[in-house]
Length: 298
Image 1: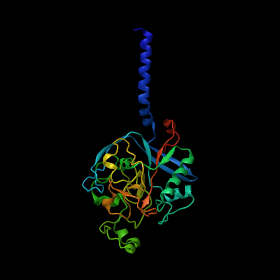
Image 2: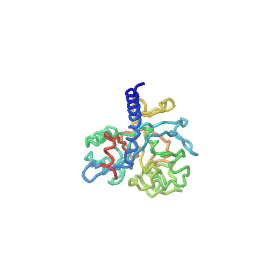
Image 3: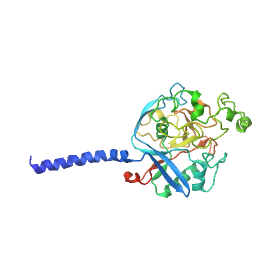
Image 4: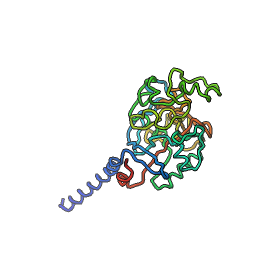
């Protein structure tokens, strides 16, 4: 074989190797955290979630709310997820109004409907930062677990719940809403200090740095809700059923028992305006991805 042919084959081999390594290099160069200005004086903080595998639905020592057994799922693409739930300040800055019942600019927004949720995201996308979207259910749980297989991202101990989670404790049980409607499931032996929603970031974060993944508000995901989808869904980047009428909710809320706030807990969006439902956005940055390293890092 001639030297020219060897050189040509060598260059071809290098090109193949480079094409394989390029996506890996892109992921490695992504900043771990970004802060985007979405309106004058209002920013949105996001954390990078790198690809990996996890046991979706694992529940530790607490019986999982879902009837389906845990299964291994692979996330193949990096994405960013909001460090916090969307606040009323962020919502108001984009939408010009605030549908929430429990009014405070630092509390998470609630009582929006699905149409308004997607309109909020559409307006975010006009900023030209890339693509904002709702996280898929699998993406949400992957970020929530952050490498754990226990019932909660902090472990299996419910005794530590008031450090990490705003749930139906004695503060909620003694509050006007629980008394008005006769709700009787509050844990009167625990107290997190909040009758309803709490300012985002009031509790300890999970191992990846995300706040309020357990409790405060159920978070709407992009997946349509189905009782039969999970057992036969793809193990690689599952995105939910192709059609549906209501969305999946994850994470539990201030009005739920602590066992409804485990990492694998899921619910269905059963009301159009619900004071226990909020949202957290995912973000796919524009390419080339490496250009963002020096632009949005904080």
